[in-house]
Amino acid sequence: MTARFQQLLHWLEACPPLAQAQYEQPVPASNDASFRRYYRLNAMLSDQTVSYIIMDAPPQHEDCEPFVRIAGALQQMGLTVPTVLAQDLSQGFLLLKDLGDETYLSQLSDESADRLYGDALDALIQMQTQSRVVTTSVPAYNADLLLAEMALFPDWLLATYLETPVERQNAQAWQNLTHLLTQSALRQPQTFVHRDYHSRNLMVLSEGNPGILDFQDAVKGPMTYDAVSLLRDCYISWPSEQVKDWQRQYFLQSVQVGLLAKDEWSGFVKAMDLMGIQRHLKAAGIFARLALRDGKDGYLQDIPKTLGYLISIAALYPETQFLAGLVEDQVLPNVTARLVEAEKVSL
Image 1 (tube, helix red, strand yellow):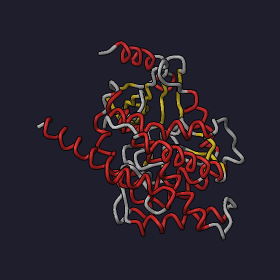
Image 2: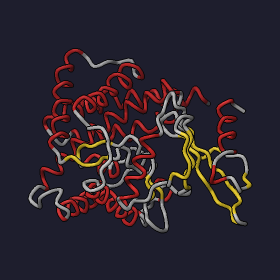
Image 3: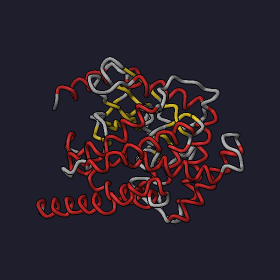
Image 4: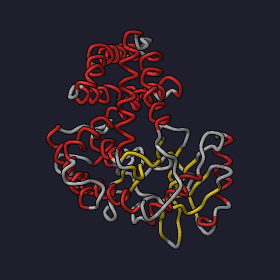
């Protein structure tokens, strides 16, 4: 038993919601792409078993305050998030309502997809419109942040994982690309952005679907970011025509609530495509960093799907075809070869 886990158990002993409860030792519930850990705790209260989630966020690495603050704001917007039942920000512990273990990723199928994505898009529109009324302080998704995220691709995927930095003759093309993507993002309507709105962070619920997790890094930024994160998910993909249907559904909802005008469809599609390129450059770099820096090798398996989005979408526009060619001809084959070699070594 680690000193950190003992610290957690000691905190639970003094936690008011558990004062009259008998409970078992917490068991791991999940990890995410950060230093946070999650535990599930079953407690007996008034002859009923109640399940809780404990967030363990070491304060030297993580700050729980944004989670608590943004959870409150999202609840005021009428969205379903884990209720914070007890907190100790100085130690980095939160006791949360348990939203279950049925993620969108585990429940999505051809039969359920329209319903689940419909609910997720409804919640996204609600989040974007209600954030005008329910204000909470979140950072701006500004040019510096957008550029820093895209730099993860050459820094971690190309130079560190593949050991093939951007060639000098491609440096100007890369600079032009990142400038284009940044300016496109900044020109969009700026709304509340969850920033990780995808199938691993949405829970299937019988009421108030979806349950929304992992919102602590929210920002104010381009309106299409969460939509493309959801519809071109790094962990699950759908036929392009089906994605187009959901994209049109989101567009029409955005028009109804005044985020967009009905004659902006073509501009909206391109803005969302370019936003997706920015998102997937960031994601591919993060997956490499998680493996190399943090020892979370499982994320390497998510890189090929992410690169597939880059190839198919970047090929659509003359100004991004440089990237499509680079990824298709060099990056994806090298990543695939690395993964095959790693699998052979593990056998």
